[in-house]
Length: 278
Image (cartoon, rainbow, N blue to C red; front, side, top):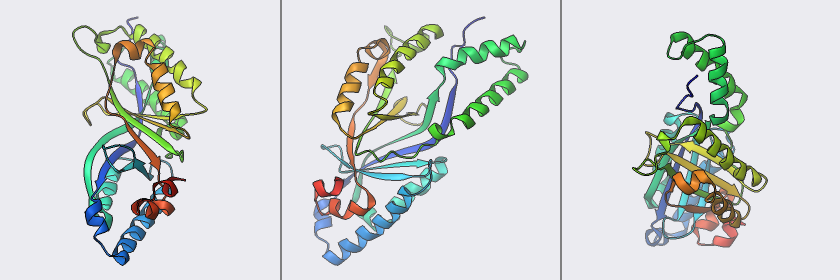
């Protein structure tokens, strides 16, 4: 049997990260009554999004550094839901004082490197031939069963952790190193070893991987949620020593945010950073 070259994947919630600069000078120019009304409207909207079920939530994060002031993370069932969320933010009164810095579009993804080979072996053991309608139907049925079994991971709730680290990344596909030309078995081995590192941090970091090939400028988006920011540095540093990261990974910009719950958003807009996140 020839190994499959393309690992199977499961897709779940649609994800949109929005990063904004607040036009603070204009904001401070408003009278106190108007600022209060704008904040209350946004707090009510955000509270409703926080309380929604998995796969349909939004959350706000105060950003550190020059890349932005406010990050909104939206999980929705599909792209139509993301469009609704994006339009709602634009139509809220606060939207008049937000300037987009950047954004990122992706879909929660579970890669099946570990089980793709087993699935192919099982189907071939049933005398099914790759590329036939019978094969495609069997693959679809298998993925549907796995998708139902992994629904909680595919349509997660946004963790309530204090810190968020988000970054996009690619696999190298240049002249010297091309991930997509490495034999499947080798990629499977490297991904297994890569995953072992991440699992050691399972009690400290909640990770959401989303695929963005065809949707945005990088191939994946990575969300790491934790109660302390130092664990981001420790985890990512250690992962850079494993083969898949050391030889084949390209990292995009990193965005760090602190969770601002809806009831504290007024403090954030008043410039009270510590009270807004604690």
